[in-house]
Length: 417
Image 1: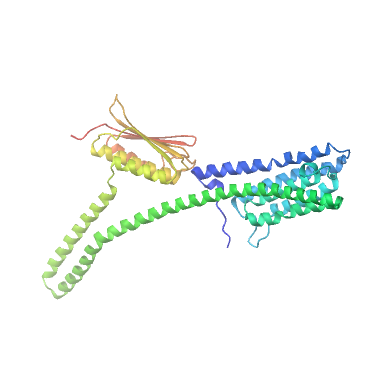
Image 2 (image 1 turned 90 degrees about the horizontal axis):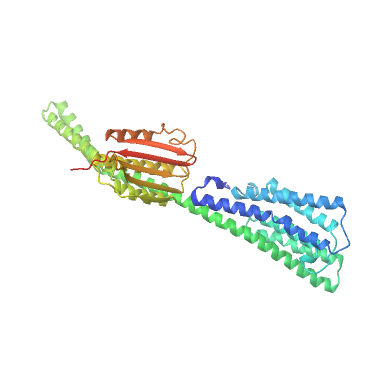
């Protein structure tokens, strides 16, 4: 089953920039086709033969339709295959091939014969080469280059055939072969340039997919580690509780007073297990500001976000430092999960007038409609941060300006004795 490729707009960061640049470049490349066609008009200037207005208008109209279909083919091929599941060409591709054939036929009928050697001296060969090269270039967006170049062999064959049909003399044969070779080289350059550009885009897509898979694996590995730690801490205690509870039940049925002693042991085991679980959870929940800043650098860089930390880690009382560390952790989580950020800045600044410590996290790529941007007051994470900061006398402010999101936390500048 053929899987649909992700649209270019779904990619973030540098991948999106590469795709946008390549798409615009290929569109611009197609728009060069009318300018190449002007060589055919220039060749007509040296002859007394001027095509009739009607047929010339038809050829011009076909040329414009051909350009539009090339743009449409590139647009479709950027995000999905150019053939359906049964290897049938999509409608835009079928229309492009049909119009290309029409351009070739009308060029042969309307334009005059060659007035010189090579493509520059033959209006018909120039039009055929340009139309063929543009068509193969559009197909090369989502078609293997070998297949495109194989199909493109029809262009020099048609060029040689048209030249020989008008004058099959020995001199014309050599000139026709040279013109056909020039047409194929022109097509080779056009199609290879497009295919190379798309190869770069495909590499970027694979790298972005690998980065996202790595992030998912890291989350899964962390979950497994937590599960393993909890199993090691709680598993043994629960096994002992189960055995002692069974023993206590058996003793109680016989009226043996030792059953009460066993239940006391079960209670002690449960209390010890609860303390160990709290100790483990406290280890996961403890937050250190310096550690969180280092982790923020690592996580954001792995996500393709340029990060800059300005300022020194302050000396604060443990509750205030812990609250700011949680702000960093939550902010980085929101950037990775709910934005298409490409750069992030973390500022640490102590206000001289009030002595309070200010932590500011700003990033671009904020998505409208995501909790924390469209609904600044609705995010559960932000509510939790406000509660933590309020407990130490601090406050939290959030603001969004276009695609930029700024989170500002303030805590009293108290220092441990």
